[in-house]
Each structure stands twice: as C-alpha cells, then as structure tokens.
Amino acid sequence: MRDARLKREKTLEDVAHAIGVTATSISKYESDRVKNIPQEKLQAISEYLDVSISYLLGLDDPANASPIVLSIDEQLLIEEYRKLSELNKETIKILCERLVEVQSVKDDIVQLHL
Image (cartoon, rainbow, N blue to C red; front, side):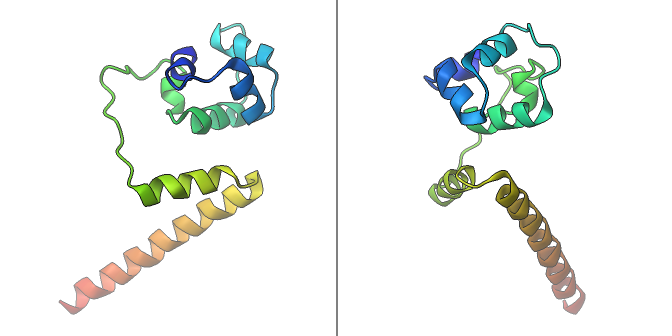
C-alpha cells in the first residue's frame, strides 16, 4: 500500500481524506498493525491509488503486473465516477452490468441471423 501511495506522490493525509479515515489509520494499514481492513476502505484505497485490492494486500507481484492503458475517454469517465456518491457508484455499476447483458443478447441475435 505504501509503495502505491508513494509512487503516486500521495501523503498519508491525501489518502485518508479521500477515503474518510485518519492519517493514523492509513499508517496502521500500511504497517500491518490493522489485520482486517474493512472491505469498503480497501476498495476506496484501491480506487484512489488506481491499484487492485490484491496488490494492496501484497498478493500481486508488481514486477509481473502489466499496466492497463486507458483511452482519454476512459480516464475521463473514471475521474467523473470518482466524484460520485457511493450510492451513485453502485447505480453506475448496475447500469453497466445491464448494458453488457443487453449488448450480449443483441450480439447473440445478430449471430442467429447470420
């Protein structure tokens, strides 16, 4: 967690403010003094630092990780998403899932007609 924070040039206070905890809490998370970080806090840190939860937990080897290249549109969408309330983020997730389902059905119909 600390490595990801430092690579992004974020302070303990930056991360703490972004996820709604104290800088002391972030310090404890980083030093493994807290063994059971709440899932919602891990998710928030993951999103804020743009890394996977498994990376934060030390389960991913950063040397083997391939960077994800995002288009400008994708980057802008992520920036807007991060401004949303938790309720609206959940709504967006549901909408995306439904759109993927609808797209899949439409693709299946097209395949049937070919």
